[in-house]
Length: 219
Image 1: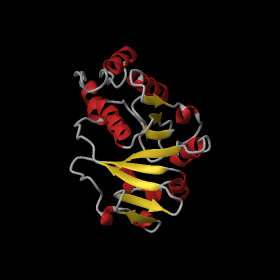
Image 2: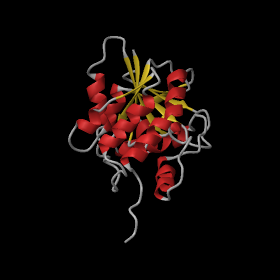
Image 3: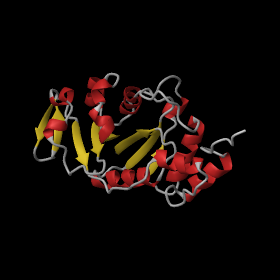
Image 4: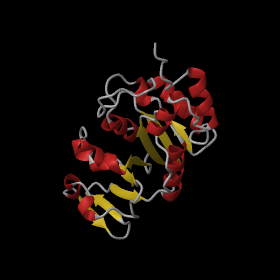
């Protein structure tokens, strides 16, 4: 079993998230990519636009038709801030012999990993797949790897990634650029505009039925 964990606020989940998960799953022969919606983001001062229960349900609706994608409510139901180390410990402790765990991160998040809670332990428990942003090449230049990571990993020219003493790897995946973001979707909804084709139709209906992200009319 090769399991990928894809965390985020998913506020809301959109077609870019789904396409990214599918490309990563295929590229690294993962049996499953499991979306893990964040309950309380520890690195954000602002609150998500939708409550955790709504974000979780939107992810459930979005992945329902793809057998290679699933969703976990672990961080939504766990009290307190949602730290990646706690999630990785949970899943790594439940792996069977021969199973492999992969944490899927966007490039921006990866570049800040040295500020994460217990990041050194995290990098001994899971492989990390770093996905691109627009303009990102097939591999990340060595000088852009966070210094704290370079100290613990050696470059693997065969795998075009980095490996530490525990055998865990940091790998890079150039994604198809999909020009859509959750903030753009929230902005469109706030202006009363359509989000059709930016999110799955089931998510669009849920947003409408639950009146999510719409600004209250001025008095």
